[in-house]
Image 1: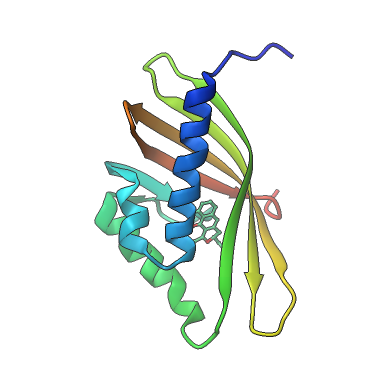
Image 2: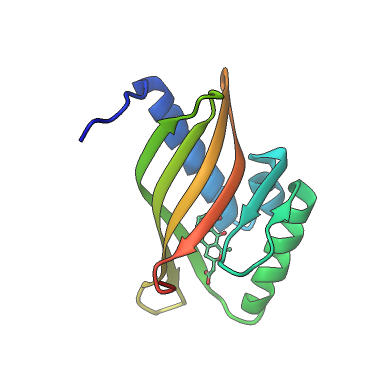
Length: 142
Ligand code: SDN
């Protein structure tokens, strides 16, 4: 397999970015999560859902989605792995990532669902990384 090289410092920068981004989501800090997107960034977390465009819409979408857990003491954690980066002609990075959503309820065992593939376009400008677009596909929906 011939892979185009990605600078190791950029790869580490993306890993660092994802760690903070997903800890914001799992910590319920939706404004912080939305701030990791470009101002006009788009986010589609489930097939069939309308993409949310812009940070305010991303926060609204996450608040609406998480209403289902209002009376359900659940901790969700999004685990990212196998981050595959490809530089695009415009300098952005296409990032394809495996993601497992792990759910734990008090006293319960961790459950894994869904198993996803995340298709991101990332913009790296100096020290800053932003997500320009995110489309999440779910493995059970083939
Ligand atoms: O932000 C993500 C998400 C995400 O936000 C998800 C949400 O619900 C809110 C990055 C990478 C992967 C995901 C995956 C999901 C799963 C989605 C639907 C569900 O949990 O049923």
